[in-house]
Image 1 (cartoon, rainbow, N blue to C red):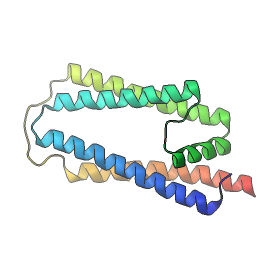
Image 2 (image 1 turned 90 degrees about the horizontal axis):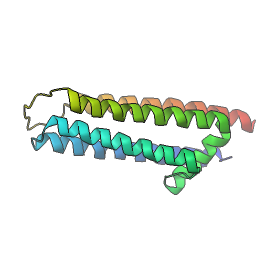
Image 3 (image 1 turned 90 degrees about the vertical axis):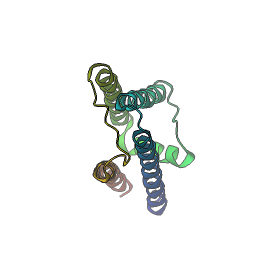
Image 4 (image 1 turned 45 degrees about the vertical axis):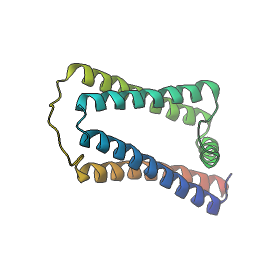
Length: 156
């Protein structure tokens, strides 16, 4: 098990890494839109991104190797211990399935839907950023809270 103070530091690093990744993805998408590239191409890019994430998840499930930073690996090991092997594998499996469904949906949307060709110099609306940050941080926060609460009960 991980000490409470150390767990707090690892969760903070996880929070910073997650938000930095989201910022980089959004800046990339925003730059793509601002350059006037077709929206359909962005949907294809998102589909490939989801496909790569799903492939990484499948690799982790099949080999048991964790593709992450050293600190993230420690968090994954902790979560695995707290949740139990069966629940953790079920959680990983559902996550991979959802990501792969998103990939297929993006590919189908890019192939079938005729997206408008309008160009904007502004990029994405700031509300998109705010909504995504709230959703991602809320989901991760709730998940972390539940796991850490269960871990604290196991220590008592």
